[in-house]
Length: 290
Image 1 (cartoon, helix red, strand yellow):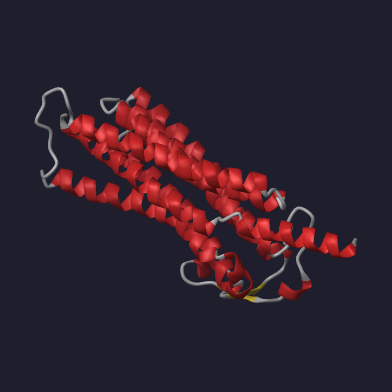
Image 2: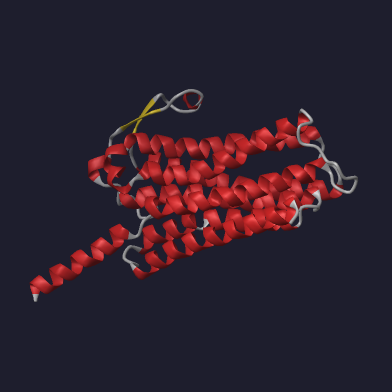
């Protein structure tokens, strides 16, 4: 077997393992369907690993695709990332019984201080008190990325197809998207710092690392591969294969492998055990009442 066939076999196994862990966890939540609002958000988050794995696997199968094709695959992953970030904040709100749409903010958490840091202090007071308005603002800061990401993706693909996707256009989109995702992640960090004690039983850090870890690895290994290409360490030895296509293939293969570990870690971070425990507790109470 040549290296290409071994890589394909290995990544196929990785995608299957990722799907196995994810489907197993999803089925556990469905079988212990106790709190729909929370578990709907959890299911969307759990699907991040298999979607990234399948998306990358398709890119690996079509490794000689065009730049527009790879841009489309990247856009699918990044648009889903935006949705996951928004759903993560919704999950945290649900844990604390906060409902923005119904204007429900528990009295026990009203008035807490939120301390902003630079550069947010250019647009917000350094210290604000938590209320319905500030919670709504945090929600808007996450959901703006859900809107901006797909809009930018559509524009980027369209410009690539018509052949006017120059380097300065690329950098413009990169700056816009980095500001947008930074604001979304900032809102999650601010919320966590304010409610770290109340959220502790729900393992928020482990849950957040499942999301941030995927984004972190995908981004920084992409940067590393770009550097290796620029240094000439990664290069094409075939006239029919461009170095950019080799870089994309390596990135996709690495993502397929990494998603196995994240899907396995999700078994701990997003375990269905708390919902099974709630169900068992309810059953015991019902028997005692009888």
